[in-house]
Length: 101
Image 1 (tube, helix red, strand yellow):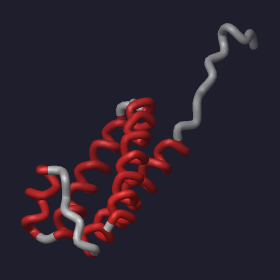
Image 2: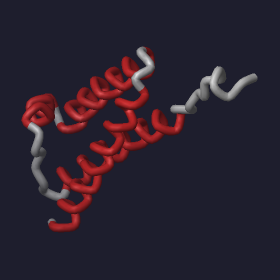
Image 3: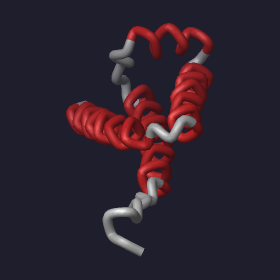
Image 4: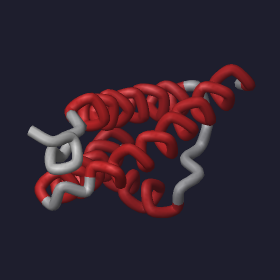
């Protein structure tokens, strides 16, 4: 096989796993922050939390994971990779707010 005719497939499973782990960490750090007296900054999540903090967060995570599943189904793995950076920063933000309480 010629190197120019062979396409290299990238294994995106690591990015998908990181996406799922970051979703779990976001729920944990958000619930911890709420328990310690912090507020939710996102208006959308705040609206969902009217049904209860855990219910609202799990509803938001359901939507997020459904969008992630859509990205996997449509092979938009690069989008998941970019979103992972956002969620990593969000978790750091949550931790910084927790430490400041």
